Image: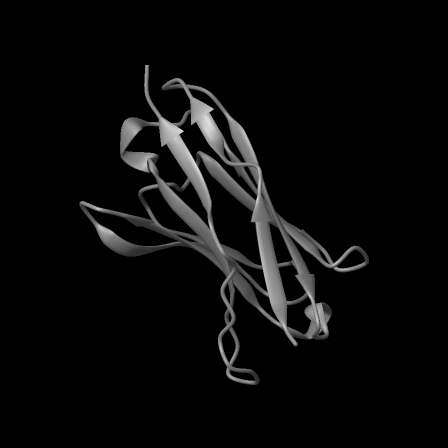
Length: 117
């Protein structure tokens, strides 16, 4: 069974940094493009960024471009999201998802990020 598990969320002050991790299992991770999405009560579900299966192409929502960096380690079946200069509007539950036409979308359980002073 394909599964994803996020970790690394927490409470951080504005301007701070966090790194989220996503561990994949039950499928061939290196074959699948991946993405991060987030959900907050005020905005609903929002696409954050994606990375292709080789890790060579990354794309960002303009709201996070220049502050967030997505990466992956296909040898370890993991993906990361480095978040810098966090803002209160980044507060959300962050999910990692598969993003490929070759498999049914899989989403993790999510990790809460709260940016507040």
